[in-house]
Length: 422
Image (tube, rainbow, N blue to C red):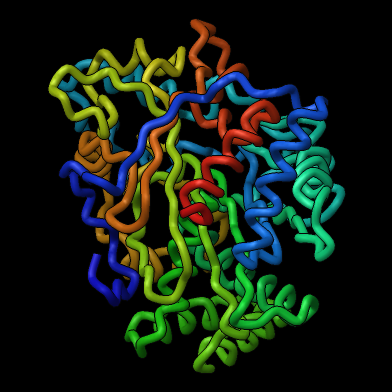
């Protein structure tokens, strides 16, 4: 992407990424309950500390009840009704596997739907309902915190942040501003400065929130930033959300300073994030994209997913090729805001950040089969989660593997190796 990305969409390049890319397999490690696991994690903690990482933020949403494939927008666009799928074998079956009513992923209890609140009650509910599937549980965040700090005199804080899980442009934009406000408070609370780093690990579409944050933090005076904030400010005024207005004012003033967040570097890791928004690396630290991937291609392009109809309808139910949410929740898909004011603000944001809409454009983007964006390092991992089971709750179509407890040490070691060794 350009040095000043200015909220442009990723170019969805299918070119060989060269030395940006590494492959790895999830290996059997010590049990998270064992002393060996703690010792290896503690060694990672020492390396994090030597790299001046002061805090680790775990950012995630919910897999249940949030339309993770974004079928609402595809259905609203009327692709099937208008006959776009005619002559494309397997499309109907693929969309049925993606649709919330038929994909086998449960709803949240009591009809709970986004926006989800970042509070203890909601996090506890997710831990009970979903466990460690695409979810950084309280127990696992605490396990990591204790282990990485075992040999440190200056502890590294570990913070779990639940974003609203509103899988549309307005929701992700609001989440980006909210996250910046939280990071600002964290920097103030811990008296962090330009010698410090914050490591953010984001699952799924939370990674798209980070992409927007990277554009907001661009050190140049880009034209998109005031427009982005204006759309959200207008929405806050129209919906009489005084708390949101105050948060926007805080972030706007922070972004107007030469060193937002006191100059603290933000190192970012995404797990299973669909390739949509472009990234602006100028205002952030290090960047790594991790994707659950098993090569099914026969053309030698093992860095791409495989998107062939109707074969994908047989591969996807057992997560054979890896993460199908990452592969299919691309431009043109999305949830839909429930209110008219929300829909109007979402349309303004969408015109700015993603110039793709409609069933045919979605199919075109999905067929690009791109696993990672044009900026940052890339790690394709076989998380060994395809066991032959067709029960979506065993694998969530390859999208749950990253946050499983048995993968936490592997992930941490990979991040330390990519960012802080050598």
